[in-house]
Amino acid sequence: MKIIGIEMFPVSIAFKRKVKTAFRGTARDEGVREDNVVIKIYTDEGIYGLGEAGTWGIYYCGESQETDMAVIANHLFPEVLEGENPFNIDMIHVKMDAAVIGNTVAKSAIDFALYDIMGKSLNVPVYQLIGGCYADKIPVSAAVIGIDTPEVMAKIAKDSLKDLGPEARLLKIKLGLEYLKDVKRVEAIREAIGPDHYLLLDCNGSLNVKEAIHFGQKVEEFAPVFLEQPVDYDDLEGLAEVKRNVPIPVGACECALTIKDMMRVIRMDAADFFNFKIDRLGGIYKGKQAVGMINAAEKWVLMSAQVSIGVGAVARTHFSAATYSMFRHSRSVVSGVFTIYPAAEPEYVEVENVIIGGPKVEKGYAGIPPGPGLGIELNEEALQRFITPGKSPVLIGKKSLA
Image 1 (tube, rainbow, N blue to C red):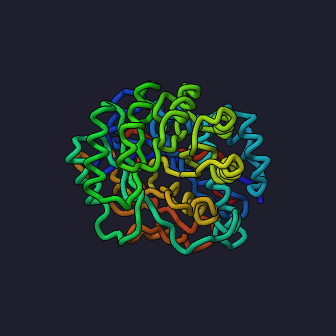
Image 2 (image 1 turned 60 degrees about the vertical axis):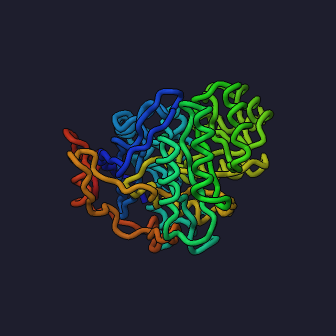
Image 3 (image 1 turned 90 degrees about the vertical axis):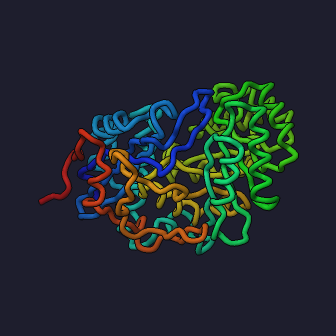
């Protein structure tokens, strides 16, 4: 089997509601428009694989829809993929890293598509290729709550738990613009949801070291389980100092975009846990490496997600089903917290799901994806409403030998 072509679909998506964050102190509204790339990799045996590059935007990890499409078209396909056997996943990753520095979101999309091809070829689900299945359903996070007044944030938190059942849930709380007022926000949320649910406080690198230490000490009484990326991602020394001086487990996120970044954090003992994303790390292959390394360092593993139109979310579900560390008491494993809309719509209008098949999310649990490969197909007719205005799909190489 050989790779003969790749097709790229530029898509723009939006959340039903935006999420205000304090990303490095810039007060960004996330979810207003996210520009992704859905890909199909074609083989000479008529099997194709689906992948997705979800960038979050150029400010987040240095990649955009434009850069990912250019890197894939001009470098990763002609220099690495064309004519290659998709089963040679180790060698393909080595060659991708040699051909292009960074650009791990683009590489993740390719990785997902390669695993989809391998699963379809062998007629087995991807999770069977990467570790088997630990459970028939996976708990998902209840909500990601953007910065707002304490009252609004508390209401969103409480509403997110409706109809989910009695199990404890993880809620990710965005904070960091006004760190002392944030204490009141955390207090209001805890009062609204009670003592049993898990709070992950995410400052997105917006605080200086003293502010982060003060904040971590002040919110301890409200029993958050994690404090994620309190200081700038360039400041590992500062992150280590925060970890030494607050009672809450402190985590690395934006400072650990790659496996090498993670190793630097581990060597400095700068964090208690890693909030990592396989769709910005390089995909399933690199994700398995990262989890093994994190576990060996006796750190927590917590997985979250780039924004996904569906393909990336399904890939994460396969990874979670086949990774024992994902079944500890706190996890955030699939998209589904927000309804996705076409960003080009003048008003939010719900549209047909572009993914045929895949896991169902019910009562806060995602089912294990059925079918070979990722277990999904692409509804290209429905996808058309998501195509980025002014852009069109791009085919490099060919779809078939005919």
